[in-house]
Length: 70
Image (cartoon, rainbow, N blue to C red; front, side, top):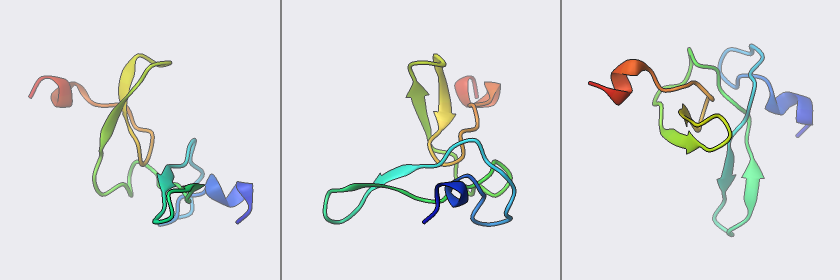
């Protein structure tokens, strides 16, 4: 897969800023095509030490205020 294709939403085709890296069944880390914020079905937030904020590991969206304080 081309590096350019990693930065295109796999659902709607718009440009995205990041792409997820997953571990496959053989234990290897592989990059998969990203997804934009609109097409992300489930935001799964992880803490980004560089940004000092929680962000979705699928689309890169930052956690909303409601996520911190429901």
